[in-house]
Amino acid sequence: MSIKTACVQLNSGPDMQVNLDRAVALIREAAGQGAQFIATPENTCRMRAQQAEKLKTAKTEELHPGIPVFSDLAQELGVWLLAGSMSVKLDGDHIANRSFLFSDTGEVVARYDKIHLFDVDLPTGESHRESDLVRPGQQAVIADLPWAKLGMSICYDLRFSHLYRDMAQAGAEILSVPAAFTVPTGQAHWKTLLRARAIETGSFVIAPAQCGEHEGGRKTYGHSMIIGPWGNVLAEGGEEPGIIMADLDMEEVKKARQAIPSLQHDRDYRIA
Image 1 (cartoon, rainbow, N blue to C red):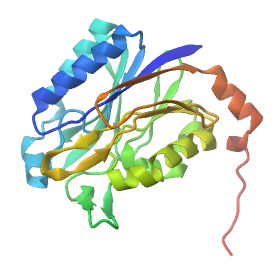
Image 2 (spheres, helix red, strand yellow; image 1 turned 90 degrees about the vertical axis):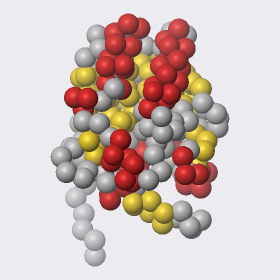
Image 3 (cartoon, rainbow, N blue to C red; image 1 turned 135 degrees about the vertical axis):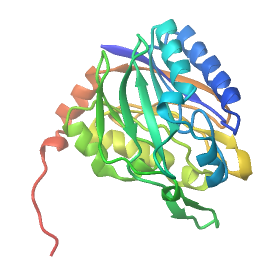
Image 4 (cartoon, rainbow, N blue to C red; image 1 turned 30 degrees about the horizontal axis):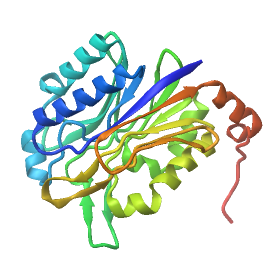
């Protein structure tokens, strides 16, 4: 079984309606080219520079403008749609960085809250403290697509290989990594880590990304990717908004896992 899959690459800013309009246009373009499953990046609806502004402008799930937009669009186009992440206001002074999976009838069939939060001090002097505002998720999520099982993650999760191994061992055959990778870490690690997660688990990896310069001067790497279960790059974006597409032949997952059945070879050990 083959799935025509698309990743949408965006340059999201502070204006939610502008971001939604741009995302919708690219999703329509992908559907027009035959995509059955379409994914957008982390922070699809808005990227803000200041924590106070992020909290001030965040919406609860019930009031979030992005949810009905993507629900109606998935139903209209007859596609499965992964909104890579949206900021959802929680109680108190926290938000969730949450992925939403919409079926081709517009139903929200899965939600995933980012588990691993981006608290880093880069060699370039760039610092981020996502945990100051975002409440981490506590549950890995595997969702049923019509064609395969999808293991959901977001951006910084990519560095925690055990999450993907656990999801693959639980049945995930496609792994989603919507992201807003910084330029220096993207240049150094993005492609290597994505290929590693695909190879380690014998899974397809789809990674829609943010690109370009955002509010406050933050820059993201772009280079959205679709990778096969043998680690082969099926499609790669550049540094501008757009779409990439590839056919995912699910038989390739079976072949990769039969050739190297490492998911079945765990052994107990101690550290001396």
